[in-house]
Length: 177
Image (cartoon, rainbow, N blue to C red; front, side, top):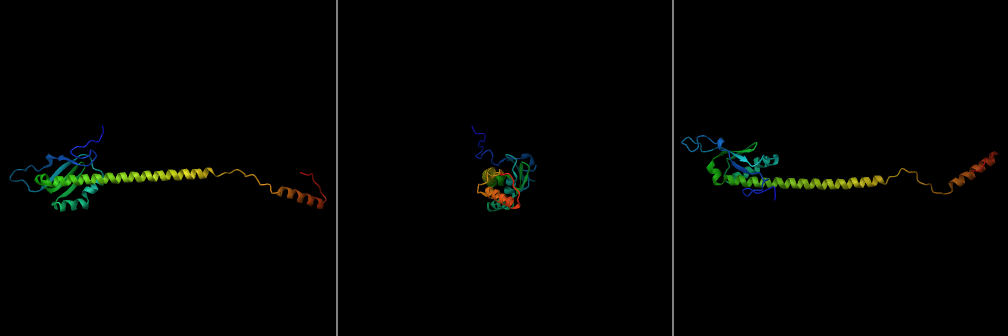
């Protein structure tokens, strides 16, 4: 059985919004004094990562909100909560919640793809480095500091002959070697 199960159509590791934090709503809701727009805090399914926060607060999300009919909505991430400013519960129920859910799913997929690409690249770099180290090691093992055998080109014999001639001219003789 897989440890990652889908809940509400979202893979378990996707960043999602779980619920509205009711205690953060204005106390005057559903009264004559209720504000028309206010901040609604929603609880994330898990703590968002840095890339997810940047994606959620970035210009693309603002463009999506504006093109979906929510140009005045502003988002703030506060730990495991998303503060949705300048909205109301009705607006969320009628479509804003769906827009946010779809954006979070998109951000999760983009983040996952980027991590997978980065991991693949790191594995590729590591494999190339292992190949390089193996090639360097093989080349280093081919280096020999042994004295190579001298080819017998007759140089020793010529040297002995010259030495004998020199000794003969000088009148000294030495025992042959």
